Image (tube, rainbow, N blue to C red; front, side, top):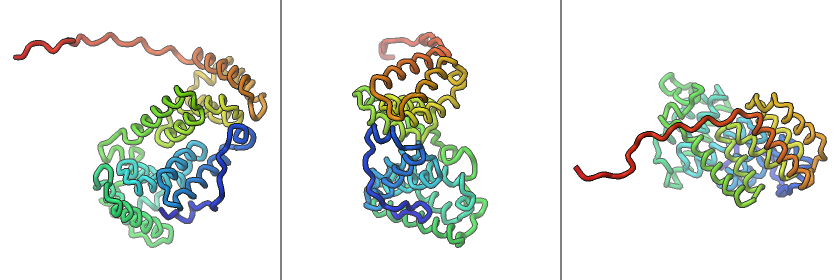
Length: 300
């Protein structure tokens, strides 16, 4: 995949951030830039699966349209038809010039017409070349204006999900990644679980993902990342924001060192988790089981 000029980051050697270093220095923007640059490096080396993972993770920290574009392009090259269409459509909702490009509308429709997982590697590369050429034409002011009939993508908040009849392509991807997050947490692999939570957030802004990322950062000792993601979680959970008990724990986290020691981190997590549980309304009472028959019965 050739990166579009406005998305290219200078190639650098990215060191995998250990807990101490991340807790000590990385802001949201710095962490997002670090992951983005690593994704660009991998993409330039043809390692698109690895690049996709880095771009997905970068989206959790710097949710910009350039990161979304790179996610979409990786899906094109990897042959992930539905995610390529949905992510490109979501990108075009933020870029009127791309919506109005006949060439981009045509290539997006062509991707949507391919098999579910595009099997032909040459066809994937051909489609990517068409996407790249169409995007370059937009940037250079050479795009052909799309007709009303062609302007199918990027023209409503419903996006490709409504147009294709598939309402779950991105939410399903988020659920798949969340399942891997749960497996990592059960294996006590906090860093692995954090990576999956970051990736899941690229496809669904579910409040629990902000909690998962924030609490993982807390247990890993990353004070500033903890505060940032837990603030995003509270914005989506007003009951939590209104809890004096939760706010006291948040204040204590803010008073902790930038790199929180393990014992203190675990104590703060236990307090925070209990406070949030008390702040949230109780789960609804499960409905009674329907009166279904439990045996097959005799043949007619």
